[in-house]
Image (cartoon, rainbow, N blue to C red; front, side):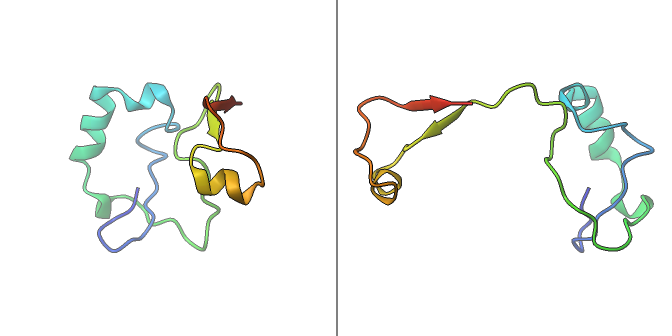
Length: 84
């Protein structure tokens, strides 16, 4: 969690991980009620990873705008190019 000064605060005592289950209405309400300043500041320069863990699958759309197709030296597709 970021505080109002952009400092990273440690949520590990509040939730185990930010997964789909942690994004329930009840957990989000619990997080909203927290005062970020009450959480420990994360020291140093930690590596920031994905914002939601345990994601099972990503579906992506490629060449989804004309400039992207042109950059790739490919024609603009007539249908979306989906990949995972």
